[in-house]
Length: 351
Image (cartoon, rainbow, N blue to C red):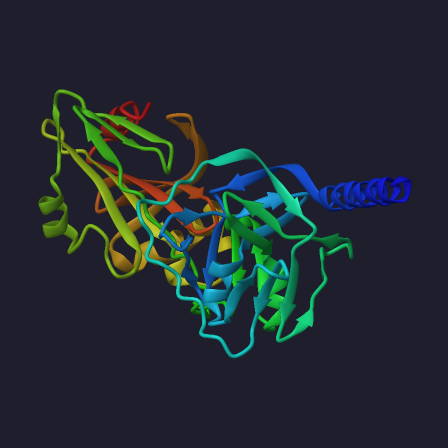
C-alpha cells in the first residue's frame, strides 16, 4: 500500500513537472498589431485573410514582422496544414496549396498594442524537415498565436522558398518577390521661365524682376492684342517677352518692359552682364536706324540698379534700362519720348 501511494505521488509529481515545463514554453507577450504595414507581392498590394475571410494584419514583436502563416503560404502556392497530434505547422509536401478566402470588409489602417502568445511548443516542418527560424541577429524566433491564427516571421516562409524580401521604410511596406521595374526617365533640362507681370487696377507688378509701375491719369496700357499687333507675339521664338507697354496720350511717351531669355540665345548666358548687354546694344542699334549714343550711366529706378544706355533716333529720345535677373534673363525697360521730360515723367511711374 505504501509502495502504491509512493508510486502515485511520484507520478503526480512527474505530471506536475511536465505541465510546468510545458507551460513555461508558452510566453504571454506584448506586441503590436500594425495595420499600417503594407505588404506587396511582385508589386501588387496584398490583403491577408483567415479561413472565414476576416482580414488579418502583420504583427511586430521585438523588431520582427510576423505574417499569418496560411495567408503568406497562399501567396507562393505553398501547401500548409496543421498537424494537431504533433502540434506542428506542416509546410510543403504533396498537399494542395492553401486558397485564401476573399476579404470581408474594408482594411483598417491604425496600429494597436495587443497581448498575445509566443508559442515555443509549435514546431514547423518544411518538406518533412524540422525548421528553426532566427532574426537578422541570429536570435531564435518562434511562432505567435493570435486569435486562433498562427503567425511566422515574414522571412521564415520567404527564405524557405527563396523569395526575396525587403523592408521599404519610406513607404512602410514589406516587399515580397520581384519589384516592378521603374521606367527610367532621362533627366530633362529645366527650361528657363519668363514670368508675366500682372495688372491690379492701374498698378503693374512683375515680382520676377522686382518691377512696379503705376499708370498715371494721362496714360493707357496696351492690351496683349495691341502688343501682338505691334511686335508679332507676346513671347516670340527668340525668347523675348513683351510684358508691358504703356503710352502717355498727352506727350506720346511710350514705356515698355521687355524680358530676354538669354539661354535661348547662347549657352554662355550666365557670363553675360548688364554692361556687356549695353555694349551689344551700342553695336547693333546704329544698324537699325539713325541712332546716336548719348551716353551710358548707372541709375536706380524703383529700387533696382540699372545700367542705362541713352540714345536718340531721328531726334526721338530712347533710353534702355538694363538689369540682369538670375543667370539667364535680362530685363530691359525702354522709354521713348520726343522730350527728355517725357522720359523723366515715365521714370517717376516706377516705384
